Length: 423
Image 1 (cartoon, rainbow, N blue to C red):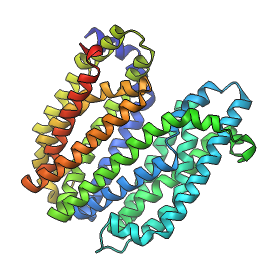
Image 2 (cartoon, one colour):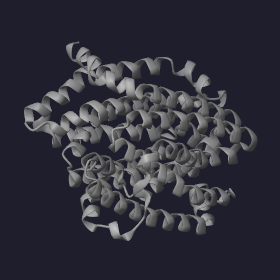
Image 3 (spheres, rainbow, N blue to C red):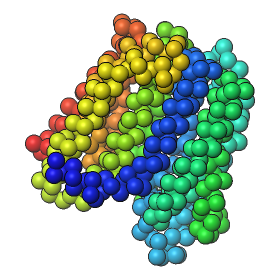
């Protein structure tokens, strides 16, 4: 209890005051959007939206070159050195502009191919990818601008951007889905984030001097310094969504679009409560791990999480499981009731995932790039292989059984790797 009181008085209070409102609004909007999609589009449409989201997540990471965390760090470091800051941001801007324009051109020209691979041969949504190609530069620009604001420590502006962006995105999404149904749901995933650029632009104002794109400021040393951040982010944010995309396509092939939609609904519910946990980990535990020098310090941080935060999270999972049949019709349409069958294994897997997260954050805290990439590739391989097998044996429940096995194995792997810091 003393640990909980300490957090409530200090860091966790800061988390709730700076990010709590934004997180709650994002979750509420997520619930509303999921409800609208389930009513107007159904399970099959939910599956298509899930595939598109996974594709976009991978493209976003490639488009930003995984520089976001590096931008935050170096903007904070160079805030009072205008020449270094101008050189850094100039280099980042030139690099990202080049990559984004190239990506947009490729996506626009390969829209037919992408439609067949992401949605399947039975759909004609090539125009969705063409719209995405046109919107991508604006969305990537907003992500970079938000990272710059974070680097300057202007958290209140970042929170306002997220709140306004989420609200406008909700209104746009509901309108598009209401009038255009499945096609509107897909468009909303693309257009809503792009609008965020214009909101971000309003808040950045005086920080825009670095947007003078010039090769005179380009410095390869800066790219080298950012490479570790880039590599870790790209591996996680590109390969992860691609594996989920492959799994969903496998479900569609073997079990149909409706079952893929049920799994997507389960993933959405899971993502909502992990927002709270990831916020606490990022703001409170990550800085603590980064500063810890001695093994005993790290051990104390790990166990403070296992004894203080994880039991609360586990209790929440138990409550969620007990009210699942009541909750599903509220969050989705009645046609989504089969999602209830996925809760048991999904929540067990999420419990192992929650225990793994605190150990995994040590990779970022200590910039253990090789170890992170190896364990990430290993866990994704286990997920893909186990899901392929268990889907063929147990049907749609197989994918959540694979989720549990993956995070059980991943947790044991990290526990062994960091055994000296834990035990």
